[in-house]
Image (cartoon, rainbow, N blue to C red):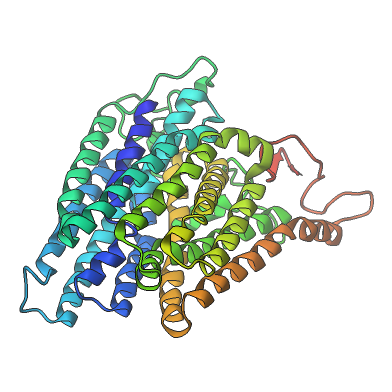
Length: 475
């Protein structure tokens, strides 16, 4: 499974050249701040629809690697096509005409890049389960950490190259890194199935739909592979008990409430994180007058703290659970958001950047495990597609709203406001346990039973979530 780590490393090396620096890229090519915000925001909006759509196709036709290959080939083409909108290539275009052309190309580019990460995540989780058994998904962070390495190396390289050569250097970097990732993905598609380890449960050794395009026979019937994988169907399973049991819960179920609160917190974290992912480098350059190299260096600092958390993700899940990891992530963001507004130059901001690594690694580890535990193996790509959509919806709202706040009130209000918002949501999430107790009392009957829910009891688990055995919900 070392090749899964390599694949993540190459993918994030590729998107580093088209990530946070795109705001500076568009600024250097003459676009206004509002136009930059629109181009960056539309990518998150399109992700909301493109990721679940492509994931549904991949799940239905058992073609995860093939869909990913097609999407990445197309996104390279549409991204490179933005060359025609550069002032040096088309000097006759006005700024508004250049923006309109970039908007169309950005829409197509975003539609094709959006499904890649959820598909890659689903393929990796499936291969881990095939190799390590039912709890293989807890080792996901150990593979994903190589993505952090690729992201840091690519960002540092691009920051230095932008200072030396200018915005045009983005295009050859995207071409070379993109082709490298596509080649690695093709090799994965040719041989996606690792040998199961000795402690892996044999039931996972023949699940073809999980790992991409395989020549091995599948135990699932064609009828099962072609079952309903619509967004609403997947959401119904997600709101059910862990493991994808289709048995419905009462609408007022405490377990369902906990899931809904987790989804809301995931959305809001995506919204406030978008102020960093899309707008932070504008704050670095315009307010703090930091160089592109310092911008790239800030990414390296975040990764140094992100990697250990991803490496020890299984142990952290066992000790803290998904709930506590998400709380750590949101609290770290709130502290960092306030810290940004106290910095006087780009180097002082570097002191806040380790908290970004804590936020991203903890939130990502928690959310991937949370979704993986609640979906059957045949629908893992669809589940990760919903996660990607939630994050994309949050980032779209956060980028658009953040741009207006930045223009009207400045960076201090933006980042302090984001910190307050996420902590209010976190407080509500932390109170979910008390809400569950109150709901159980309201639904309870004499003798300690809970109508329609079964008897509750505490069981050892590496998460703080609900599991269900037989007709009883177990807490």
